[in-house]
Image (tube, rainbow, N blue to C red; front, side):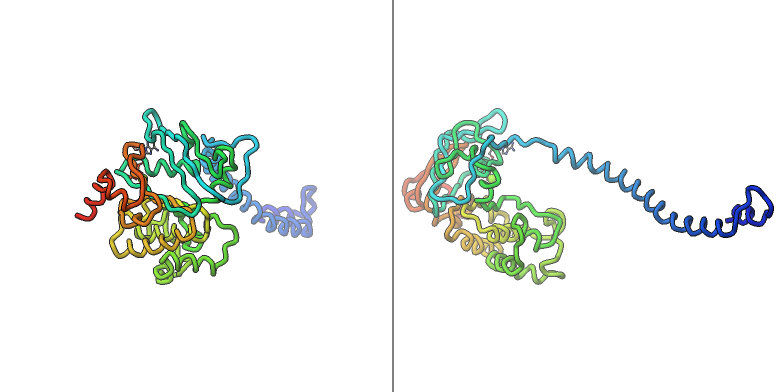
Length: 319
Ligand SMILES: Nc1ncnc2c1ncn2[C@@H]1O[C@H](COP(=O)(O)OP(=O)(O)OP(=O)(O)O)[C@@H](O)[C@H]1O
Ligand SMILES: [Mg+2]
């Protein structure tokens, strides 16, 4: 402004500036300040973003070992049975599952029991193809699951794992995760069935309360009930419950237990539990030991046969 003023006031100069021109200059100048500021902050943001992008790219570009075949078969429903045929599996060198043969008919509940490290979680992880079998095959309604669309296959299953996967978001978004356009009424209905509604509405913002990174603001039992509500909302024909009631006091265990029993109604379920009360009513109980099924049958028969299951049972009745 000083220099412009100087040019105007120096009359009769070749380099002189008209007042009109100076005004135009001022208007242009004021209009340019904000965009140019924005440009420099944008540049700064781009730099910040680039740093993040390289890290995100690393995750997005990572190749999964689980691949679809060229023309995968689409499945929309589960009609008859799941069959594990001579399935063996190793993570690295040692086999953790050996020659598993297991048929799960539609509508039945199969329970897996066994010591920690026996291979129970591994056995169920093979079904949604979190890992692929090393030997043998798993058939869903007679089709090898490797030939199915992975999305379709997983769409058929609801999974409540030992360590529920929750996100740094609200209750409502965590429960609705994976279900497109879920309506609020249905979400609340699912939470009621999962015995989660009560504690959710008692939080500050109800369903919109943030649950913290991986659900750290919740107790273990609350986290599990959220993941059960998620499974109920998804309403899948096949249900996988891995140790869903571990690490709970008896009161919350009862609440979770209730929720699970309601969830299992009219579904095909594979249940893993240390507590035998959970699985006494299963259609078939398989006892796993060192990666093999060593005993199978109904609760009553297994008790009579005086084997591993009976040992488990006695230990629990004792405690
Ligand atoms: N990602 C992995 N990589 C390598 N080995 C693994 C992996 N996950 C599990 N294992 C091994 O496989 C075996 C079976 O583990 P799995 O998790 O199936 O046991 P589990 O029966 O579910 O035990 P728990 O009752 O404690 O949950 C264990 O010896 C374990 O050390
Ligand atoms: Mg496990």
